Image 1 (cartoon, rainbow, N blue to C red):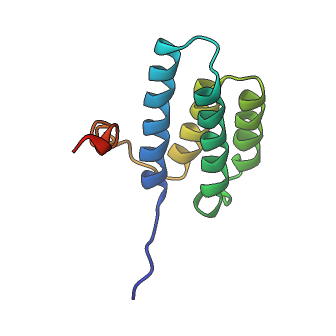
Image 2: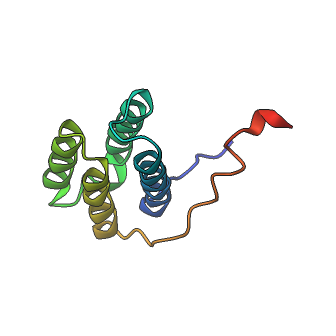
Amino acid sequence: MGVIKIEASDYLVLASVLRRRTIESLSTTRGGGGDRSALLSEITQLIKLIEPVASHDKYFHTHTELAQMMISADDPMSALDHIVALLARCGAVPTQPPPLSPFVGSDSE
């Protein structure tokens, strides 16, 4: 069985999905609540996930520390901006993330 290779562009897709979810979250509920907390947790997880593909970059620590500070300040969009900037420095090519609709409410089949 082969090894799945995840590259910077793959993480960029995840960051794009989280950005879209953040925008949706901001438009539906000001002040956050549980969904906001879960979203911030997912962004923190993404920071940990990108380490293998991004830690060689000289700005890795700068961007990840700033992203963590933005998460602490409850500013997910700015945190994602730093993650995306770091991934772009690592050669990530922007792609359009898949639509969320297949994943939302999939229990209704």
